[in-house]
Image (cartoon, rainbow, N blue to C red; front, side):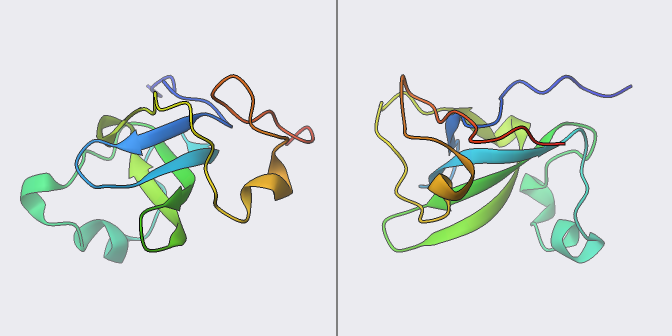
Length: 107
C-alpha cells in the first residue's frame, strides 16, 4: 500500500536532524534511489523504504544542492523565508504565502 505524501510540490521544508532546508520539486511514493545511496546511510539512522521520499532544491550555509530525503526526516519550514537555490525559479513562480506555486503543469 502506497503512503499518501504529507508534503507537496513547492512547499518549503527543513531536515529534522541536519541544518538544511529546501523546496520540494518531486515526490517518490516510496524509496526510488540506488542501493549504494541507501546503504551509504549509517544503519542506526537509515530511514525505512516504505514511505514517501522527496527531491529538494536544498540549501545550507555553505552551498546549494539537490537532496533526497525521507518523509520521516522532514518538517515544515515555518520561517516564512524564501529559499535562494538558483534552480527554484526554473520550475516555480515567486515565493508567496510560505510556498512556491508551480510555473507549469507537470506530468
